[in-house]
Length: 422
View (cartoon, rainbow, N blue to C red):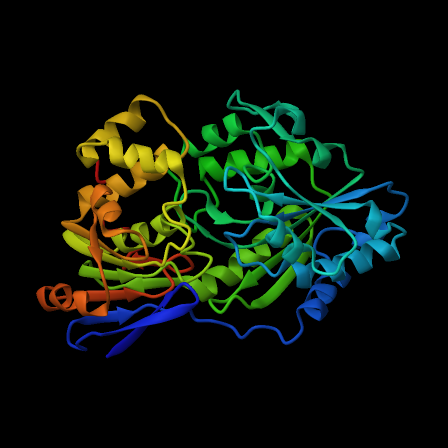
């Protein structure tokens, strides 16, 4: 059977014997809407648990709109016009609107990327900077004792709107909703604290209730406040299939139901070889982001199996600190010991790789990274489709996850093949 795996803006096809293939686990996708602006306008006209945005805009002096960064393929330039139409109908002109890119601790958008986010709209678009204290203001202390600082422009705005997509997140359950606030536009220390809880019981993709990371995100969302949200669900072709608008929790949860219908899949038994792809650009923009596809493979892999990930990584490793943690370690166990001694953002990504490396016999990577760098990261570089031949030959049971970042593959019974490797 020929299976195609996204790779950057293209794809790579592999031939896998049908008798070995447990399954090709693809989303049960809905088609994209024909007109994004019309779909967003529909959602805006029927908000969930909230007055219309135009009603909320009346009498306000200014507004902010928080949008995702380039690691999420949300077509902000197509979504924002419908929102600005609604704000204008409420008496709030576009020149009084600021768009904030929720970068968290990701890199800032370039000028070209900011321009693409803006499109032809007469609005100001700025990057959030989690390390610039002048941009941040305290919104209080959480029930866990963590003081939270949020983007000052957001906190001081008269009207606060969030635009986000809903998809699985590997430890906070789902991306989207209040996650755009925290960690999206929070301070570095708070983001580090939130990520430090990623191994606690209850965390994991698709987990909402009882998830301590998500619970803290929702608490900060209430502390910082959000007046309105536009939440979209996308298919693997980066097309919007549905938009919801209104209350920050109601509209977000409506999206999670569609995500589960489209992307939660069941694998009958642990496999010897999991072949994964993050899903192409921008999900495989760098190795830092592509880790999610490696972990997706580990969830259905028998201990001592092989994960082979196909990820372009056009921007390289994606984090200097992650690179240092990986290359300074003599063996993966060193990374595990280091993170347990002190949690460090960027180092946590090295830990996630180390955890999967210790579970698997081998992790292979087909990418644009130099082969020497891949080896320094305790992985085996692959140069092309032909290198998959021996891996496929040796395996008895193979699973293919061409959209591993989007898809939540679980073993029958709902459990991963392992809890933690360390």
